[in-house]
Amino acid sequence: MTRNESRELAMMLVHEHSFQSDLTLDELARNAADARDIQMSEFAAALAQTTLEHLLEIDAAIEKNLKGWQKSRLSRMVLAILRVSVCEILYMGDTPVSVAVNEGVGCAKKYAYDEDVNFVNGILGTIARGSGREEKEPS
Image 1 (cartoon, rainbow, N blue to C red):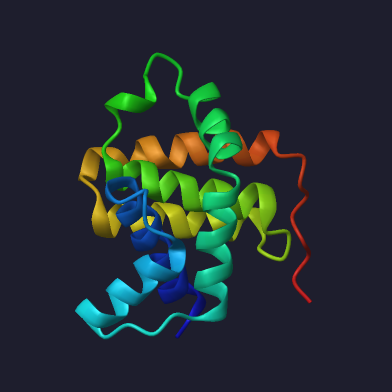
Image 2 (spheres, rainbow, N blue to C red):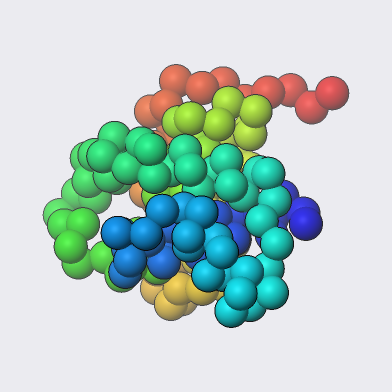
């Protein structure tokens, strides 16, 4: 499974968690494996777990940057995309910030409405700039 596919899986699990918050990540992953024949990668599990562990902080960062919007107005899909991408920006130091933003925008292009793409890009860009993380130079 590629890192891109792992991110999508993590986003799907976080999205599913918004409907079934009483289930553990293991239960959500098992359900996904049973329903869609998906195998969990180590990276997807770590990203989804880290997102759910830091959900309050991640949501606070998102809400701080909504500017005239409320989190309750966001679709669950857009919120899941933002949550996973913000998690990568703030808590997954091995992922370059620009990659986290680009992957989030890519998920929005694939899973959200066209008008959501620029919105996701703007929120993630603002959070990335305020994250204090510098871009890693390619090796």
